[in-house]
Image (cartoon, rainbow, N blue to C red; front, top):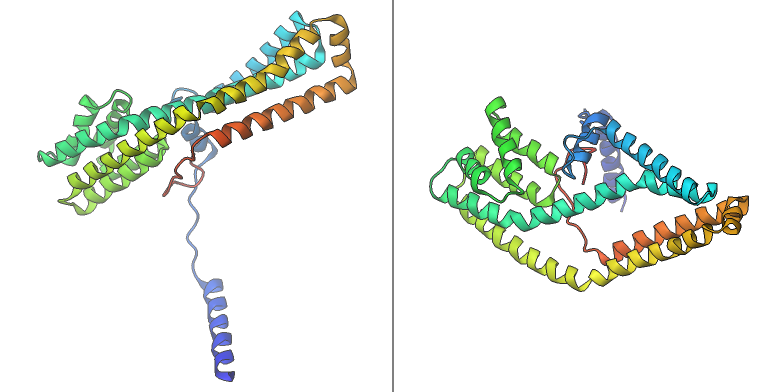
Length: 290
């Protein structure tokens, strides 16, 4: 027993010493500008800067508040409209990112099969990527064209593929990037077979998702109707002078803010319950969008 205790104590001392003296590699992250650029690029907004996005949010909030204040005349309702306007660009971003990711998910199997066919025909990896850039699905052509352009400028195909994966911010793109980078570094006679297997798996996954999403579409409709109905009633009530004065009081503002918070939480909860889980990204840079 004493021997076991001595061994455990010795192991603890060694681990403590190793942890205190080991050289730590610096954590390489992304700057705020890079993170914001990748965040916007995940929704296809490559030409929009973070400042423009924030300005659009402020303008949307101010415009919504001004319209409600002119039409209804209630400061409390205008405050809620301003909050909704500020959140509108972010909601648009999320919807656009989900739509773009779903469109790419349906297009990836065709692109992978085309890539596998080019590799099987004896083309080099850059030439195969060029085939997809010219004859692939319309949604993914710009992605592969950017890889070719990056490769021509830098001469680093692996780096170009990894930068493409960071911009696309898609779990499927991560898998394809890692497969192509590995094939580029070490070669591989089975690359075509691996890509065809991945394409078949993705087709099955897309078909299953589309069937489940069609059955769960009622959840999305119910969430939107449930979130919009109370505010339509609010507009009708606030359009009367007595209702507008009631919502301008301190208690009225509190009711509006609590109602807005409950609406947002309830809507997000229903949408999350009705949405299929997304595959997590792997091997993503620190701070990059997932």
